[in-house]
Length: 93
Image 1 (cartoon, rainbow, N blue to C red):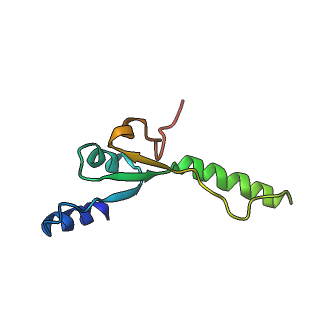
Image 2: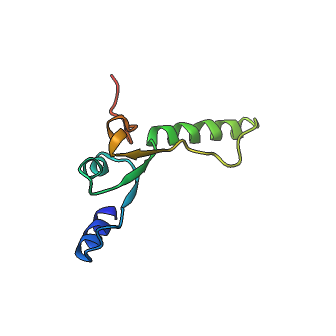
């Protein structure tokens, strides 16, 4: 959706509008680095999955689990885009 927003903003001539995306996918980082997007709120699917499994296991074992789980997120801008967490890290052999 952010790509469509960028097109609409450009078509409207609204040069002062900044577009911020979510997830920090590889497809979204390239336009972040070249200035089409101002920032992305990056999370990691692997971190989210790990948190879900941990909490589910705790609930199934009648242990305490957080009722609201906070997935770690990070604001990524052009200046720190090279250190953005991988949204879906490649398989490690």
